[in-house]
Amino acid sequence: MELVGEILLLLLYVAFVVLIARFVLDWVQMLARHWRPRGLVLVLCEGLYSITDPPLRAVRRLLPPLRLGAVMLDLSPVLLLIGIWILQQIVRAVFF
Image (cartoon, rainbow, N blue to C red; front, side, top):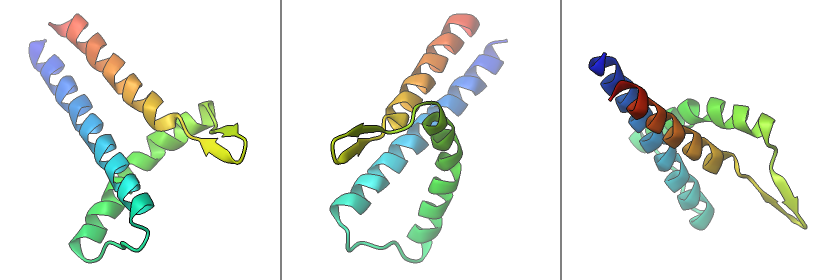
């Protein structure tokens, strides 16, 4: 049973790291608008977006971005990170 818990924790950790990498990539694209990935980096970025887009879209359907005047605040990445963290805590409580 402990093996199942270890595998689940590993999967949740990988999801957490991939989501953080997506945030870093989004910030790089926002702060360095002239930067465009090429070659292997483009393939990695495309893979990162294809992995993280479905869960982010699902959370955005539940909680659409908040309109604050002329700015839209998207809380879906934060909620997804919190959800992954909560799932990690549940797995630790159940399996360990």
